[in-house]
Length: 297
Image (cartoon, rainbow, N blue to C red; front, side, top):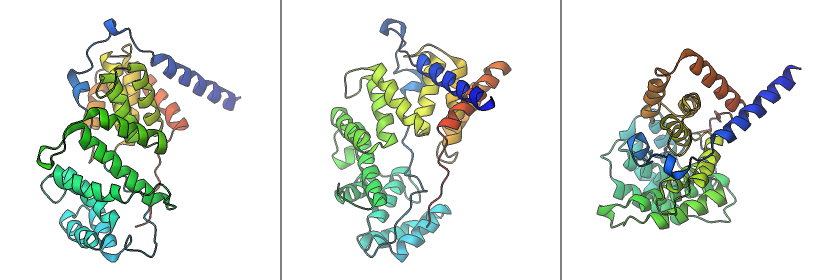
């Protein structure tokens, strides 16, 4: 009996979520390019949980392992030295980490041109027939980062902003590899009409696809849409639900803005709304749990 009730609850929540995703008529929707929604959330760094395979090529070296240990400990100066040595040996994983460090300003001043250069090295190693899924994931992840830069442009690297080309890259990556950052990007671009014809309904579908993979920026963006009543009908409970999920999916050191915004929203709803939002979040989390697995260094 309890199991049937749980199933009914999950089904009801799923129906409610689908119902809540109906797009408002354009004349009733506010401009999605104002307020917090104007921010195109920064993509998360590649997950530290990614397992690095032990194979007999320069992909796996002592310098790489030293760099990974230092990186996880937040000792970025040490990590940088080790990754640079490994990169000089032709190690594409080290290039991948260096791309993140220059993009995020970890141990070095932020330098998008350098990040672009390192990500390009990784993407150039892409082989669609690569048998090792972790190596393939690294190459695909680098392609997402390059699409990010293609969307915005990098003046010092002579990379011109080309949202239409970026959208095509995201679409290829999202459909062929299911990368949640690419799916999220397509969601926002369809909602804003950036690089593609404006299509809010399609945008919501992409955001939901990324949210089912517990991609925190997608969950937060959905929360913002519901809170502000842009594109979808305003629903404070659903907004708090999405931010509660985003808070669970995100890493606080990398996404403090998600935590801060979640607390802000929670403080502006009634106790009843908060209880309902938390209950809905638990149902969603039961269906689409956060992957907490950790890989081996």
